[in-house]
Length: 282
Image (cartoon, rainbow, N blue to C red):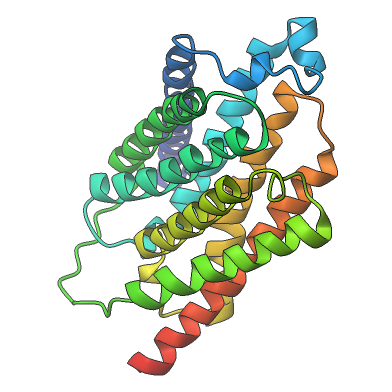
């Protein structure tokens, strides 16, 4: 009888936690959607490409809400999966993860300005609107789901090699994608804007690595690289790129190629950075 009651209590507690997670995702999505009402994403009014069937049929609002909620849910699960490697209080962990993902989202949005004749301000605002939801989601999950991990031991900094290695590899692989894989780009017609965006994204990935992966350095370099480049960055990045399908008619393979190759570049950069750390600090 006691065992049965304990199991029921555990089940009830798990169900309560699950509903809390769902409510956090819904609340974060609603915040982002409300902020979007102040300024449309410029891609909704793009004339150089056909609009998606979701926009022309009127199904865009509900599908966009579901897609954003799903993406926030996946990001929340990723956070929960890696949060034990973070050091700090619950809110600190949530804030660090939220800032890392928000920066990726905002810089990612501005690629549309490089590719298409759209407003830079509009794309930045769109990224900020989504990022507010990401940050709220991360902070709330940190507060209600994550454990404090207070560690007074000083960890060796890996800022310098990662902040250089990751951007350089990302830029090289991206230009390979532009020239050889021929993903949609403006590297011929707008070379300076393309380079600045590519270098900026590579730089932010280096900052992300610093923010979210320091606690993973004790793991095997390959595992460390796959978790950061394939899971934290890769899964989030492919979901981000697939959002383009909600707005415009564009080849799915192009979005998959750019996401997959970018993730491989980040995995390679993280692996080299991890090996560098292991070689010179152990």
